[in-house]
Amino acid sequence: MSGPAPGSLCDVLPASAALLGIAGSADRLGVTESVAAQVDRVAVLLVDGLGWHLLPQLAPSAPLLACVLGGGTGRLTRLECTFPSTTPSSLVSLGTGTPPGAHGILGFTVNVPGTDRVLTHIYWRSDSPGAPPHAQWQPVPTWFERLERSGVATRAVLPQLFVGSGLTDAAYRGATVRPASPTDDYAQLMIDELHAAPGLVYGYIADLDTAAHVFGIGSPHWHQAAARVDMLLTLLVDALPANTTLLVTADHGGLNVPPQARVDLDTDRRLSAGIRVVAGEPRVRYLHTEPGAAADVRAAWSEVLDGRAVVYTREQAVATGMFGPVDPRHLARIGDIVVICTGDTAVLATEHEPPEAARLVGFHGGATPVEMDIPLIVFE
Image 1 (cartoon, rainbow, N blue to C red):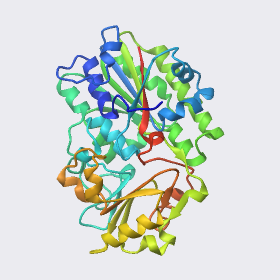
Image 2 (tube, rainbow, N blue to C red):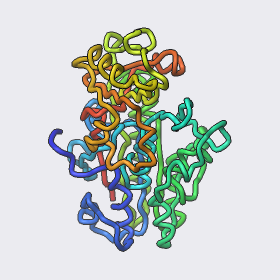
Image 3 (cartoon, one colour):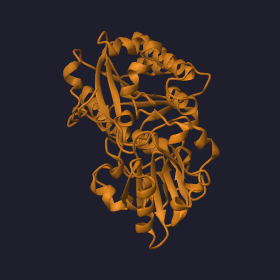
Image 4 (cartoon, rainbow, N blue to C red):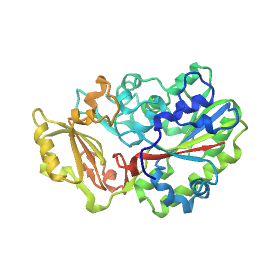
């Protein structure tokens, strides 16, 4: 479980399009080579938080995934998500096939340039005060739009809460959305869509990530969520129509952060000095500084977090290529200072974020393999 990953989350939908015979679709994952039959239906299921390095840990609670891990069924390969390893960025990278620097969803939260406002992407709705227009904030066409233009029907089975949100539009623009209420049989909704007509059917499940955040990776609640995910996958695999391929992937992995590894920027004057706006999340902080304060802020953070984080200027962070090529229109969304935690460190911001953020157990967002490496499982 080491070495460079052979592909990216950005490659999943182009490979799906290639399976469906769309001319000009690049299958960098080799999926078309491994699928024996002609395909007229593709299902893509994204399991939030299903990190590659977490598979052995959840296998005792997930018989199908254990079988996949042991080579008994499916085809398992390792991919990388995009950076930051956070859900909003990853979902839009999946949908557009481009890294965050291109599509502009550069973190869980980002500063709205020219203001002191912070946009939380999971709560982004067009009727929110000061919310940027969806297509302006995320201008890149999605693969759902491309497939529709090529005559392939695309459907997204999404939690009802997501319908109409800015993040849903940014990631799945062009797809016909099928809302799923909490009481619905989610597997059956996916199965019904697959049987209804050829094309692409996308699904998303958050149980595993929610349990990791609230109760911790490896907790009984996390293992119960793993069992529910495994049952969903089992039902889907058993009910796949003929000429159908199911691709299962994730948006990120994660790790638990113990109390002693947590730093609160709002209780340490060395870290709070010179800061105008705090964005990002605990594993990746975007610090927008007061005029003229950037050098002092970088020096202070480098000293306080020595050995626990890498501290960049915006220009240095962009030059690493970690975001992919950054559209100049999106540059200001990245902090003047970018702080990327290493090891199991997390930087809290108790006066800037809801109190429940500091109570979370599991985190992600950083650039470590346990956060960035994700699986791709292909079922026929």
